[in-house]
Image 1 (cartoon, rainbow, N blue to C red):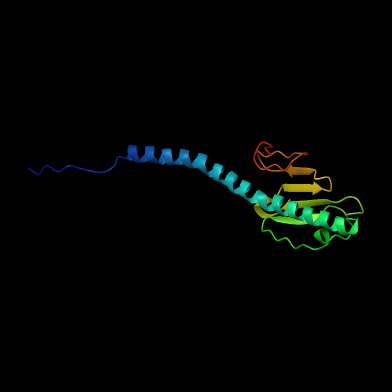
Image 2 (cartoon, one colour; image 1 turned 120 degrees about the vertical axis):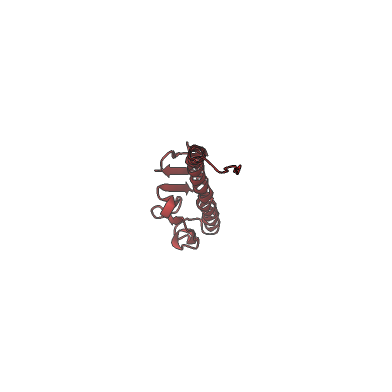
Length: 141
């Protein structure tokens, strides 16, 4: 008589492992997607800060914001944001904006001559702010 020992997994054990993997994936995937979004935001905020410096340097030299190169030329490239001036800058004021595109659609960041920063965000779980650049879900600046 041959004493064969059967080895392997039962169907129940396999289903339990699949259920655990499914639960972990349902938690990990949204967290990863949120992390990726947060990683793209500095493209907007850093470029806006640089453009603001260009505007202030232009103002120091010309005593006006009108015709400033930071508004008239798009020398900032970004895969996820389009940069522009909201309206036409005049002698004493301007508003720079970064509007999200592609996966960042719904994210808009602005800064003006007074360094007032705003965030308008239309994405699930995200909240904009009239006083800062939001970098995390829930309106965290």
